[in-house]
Amino acid sequence: MSIQLADFFPPSKPMVWYKKPQETSIKGLVQKNSKVYDIQEFSTSGFVMCPFEYNQNGVLIPNQFADAYEIPIPDISTHLTNELDQKSDPNAYQKHVDLVHKTIGFIQEGKAQKVVISRNIILDFDFQKTISVFEKLCYNYPDALVYLWFHPQFGLWMGATPERLITLEQHDFTTMSLAGTQLFTENLIWQEKEKQEQKLVTDYIQKQLLPYSSQLELSETFTKKAGILAHLCTMIKGRLNPDNNLSDIINQLHPTPAVCGTPRNIAKQFILEHEGYNREFYTGFLGEINPLGKSELFVNLRCMEIFDNQVQIFVGGGITEQSNPEQEWLETVNKSKVLGKFISN
Image (cartoon, rainbow, N blue to C red; front, side, top):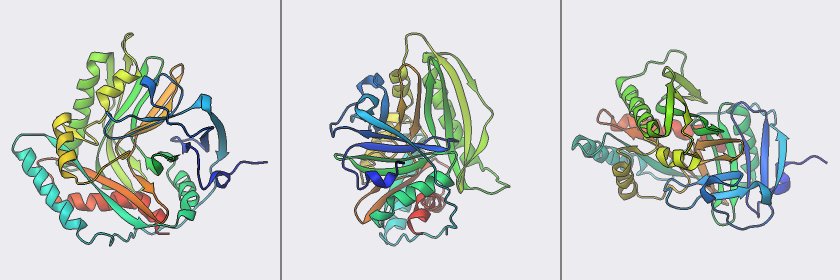
């Protein structure tokens, strides 16, 4: 008898279903109990989900206390509109533009170089569509980590993220600097603002990793397509020093300037004081942990929290001195379509 996602819905125990980039099947872990397992310094194999505020404990679904499954990705080719009803908060535009203005002023005072500002969007949603939306995301975003995650104490989350935080196998690691956003076209032109934003992320990652790696290799910066969007990307490879481990490198990287800003602590404090809502797992990280093998962690972008009859979508953008508030609003609108168009169809 074949296993289907519908067999596990509505969910009651901790579980995760996910498809990694370029893979053709969906993996599943369904925990045998409802306990909360912490990340234990990433020393136990399983799937982790960690919040933006990393001082809050992350959640682990341990392999040893879960049943594992694997199912094929359904062939779902769907025509989707890019239209998205964002009338849930008529003041959303003005609030975001005002916050971007305030953020630019903060940067112009010399207090930071970049701050990532986000907002949440509440949309009506039929819970019965959850599996269908997840399967469509798996099919339509082959280059993303697509996931559906649930824990009784933390809720139901879904996302399709293009950004890899770290891949570590033995002591060899790969990460990426991803920043700058446009709607994808065949003839993209990147402006100085996006180039500078991406360079800040690259320089930060390089600086953070140099004390922990005897060698770092940076690729040329290229355009990375992520569904309807495009980003500037630089791949970074290296080898950890013998005395360092995955926990060390995560502490150095998270949260990166791509989701927080620079300097990190100053940008993070500004976010916590001014965004006006709790990011929770948005801009945190998630993925497979395998201390004796290969660990793959991704930044939790393009994600949403699912309730009985609504979803909360999270979108944001990096603000620098060169930012234009109206353009920053438009960037969040474009990012909202990555998930939102599946909800509205």
